[in-house]
Image 1 (cartoon, chains in turn purple, cyan):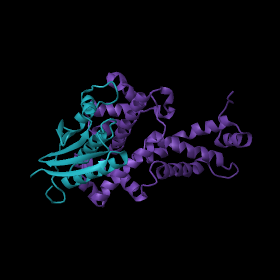
Image 2: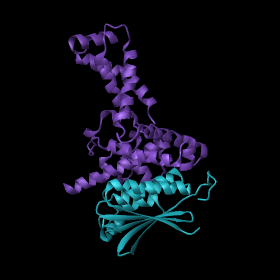
Image 3: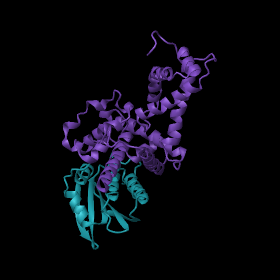
Image 4: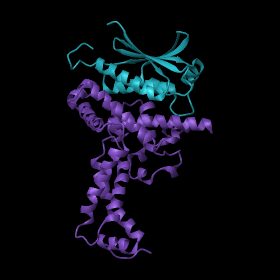
Length: 252
Length: 136
């Protein structure tokens, strides 16, 4: 039974560290989830889904809680913040990108994603490679190489397990207060086709908007609230998932 | 401007699809195409290259054809029966190939030549007023 009365961080930390009280640890994680979300948001629009970053940030938070020295005179917030940020940065460095993609190209890809947004608004059309190159201060060839390096990013992301249409497979964090819930999957029977069931709600929505509604990437980006380059990656990833799902279905 | 063409023959295996994608990227840069047009062309090409059952041999050729306001992609040789069936299939599975390509390019046709079947895609592109001052 949960104990009555407010608990300070320090009380909860002592309960966890001194007595191994896992409920206290859970409560700390819940309390600090808004901090994780706030920090993760800083790193959104860099080609990673916010919810993925929140999950990664939670790992940093848990590590901070586990390693925290209750006898030191610092606040958990102070200690946890660099841990959370460090975990997110490590994720970008080690998990999000293939090790074969040089750091410089990864950084250029991230920068191009931002420039693409800016130039699309500024020019009121999709920019050319030359315009992206000029804005980034690099050669066109480097832009193409960096865009191509985004493929490596997608491939790595795909190595993560994916859902197979069963809600139980969806990560609970995926469904927290997202716009996707507004999307009625019953809008088109086609989106319930077997292959598309491999996709999560956001991916289905994006595929629907692109291939059934005919919206452009930039229009989808605006509507869904993510970057255009992220839309592009999600489309590629979704189509690949669908292909895999259909191939698996054929083999079954 | 007379139609220019680039021809690329690659092993029909995934690691080489990136090479074809890069060539499309290079062409897009040369023609000053928009990022969105480039994305559409690359996605259309890769979707065809990666479709199971299309391969008619160990090697595949991608021809890029530059016309007035258009970029064409011819891919072949492909398995005629599989290609025809896939293009006609309204599909109970995933995103039908016809729907996918119709979204990404303006014209789709199948032609027979060199003893094989080729899928020909054509995209209307807005060639931007060149920012580097060169003729596209």
